[in-house]
Length: 393
Image 1 (spheres, one colour):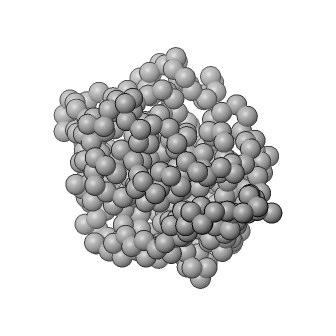
Image 2 (cartoon, helix red, strand yellow):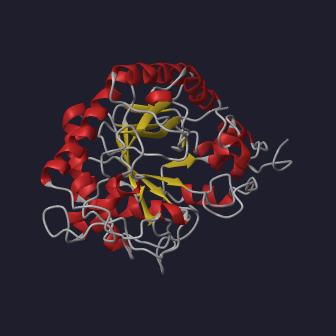
């Protein structure tokens, strides 16, 4: 069924623009539709299975030009804890079995005409103590701070620490170990055949812990100003670029909001955002993945551009919009069984205006692996249902 009986020539042209190819360094994308990273937890012992490979292949067959995988824990003992998806079911990239599992995933996606990159992830202070492959290892953060208490959050009260000081500030040795873990996994990603690297720098995880003043109160090389708080992820980007060469693109996800505080901000105007992102752009980031709950909202008062649009403007880099594309409620809203969006006018208008270069689709693509093909044809898509979120289909 068509969303509208007849789409105008202009509407058709606008949709077709999202299916134009894009070259990012050595990665040639067939279109601008991206499967957004979403944690699935179906990799026992950290090794992706044949079912995981089939899951990603179906989205590639369904028309996504690029797949960004679910979070892949880096090879660091404090990187991973219980994510509510079963102990030790989050995928890894730190051993031969995991690399081989990902190699099968990559092969299936490539055979279906799409490209794929892994999202490298360290939970930082959000790691639940006493869980994960190394339960005796304490969680780490730049200042040992979980973040301010009493803020707007969806985290269950039993998982919020009584004291925001959960440990000691990371030492120089610990910082170096964490950087090296990201680099090792980036090199392993190349061995597995991935087309680029994505870094999770949002949502209150380790890279974001350094970016956010609420968790980074250092006054050394790694903190003290917005630019200095960006130095840790920027150093990771520089090291990865040196290790993998110039051909592979690097994506960087950032967010204003944190799981600890939905109303948190890294920046309160475009110039402050430039201070945060420019060190990362200079280090070698090619695409900024601006994670928001609703992509179609202005990022700053007095400026109509969305967060992805501002990121592109202040850095000169490519950007990717995400947040409610195809779904009318944010992930942490009360009614997660959200209705399917049929009015893509705002999305097409912002893309036509050049605010962003890629469009990332999350839960809507869990609901319908063929979302991209149906979107292009103007057909109704299958709805996302919260009860299906834990199913690998």
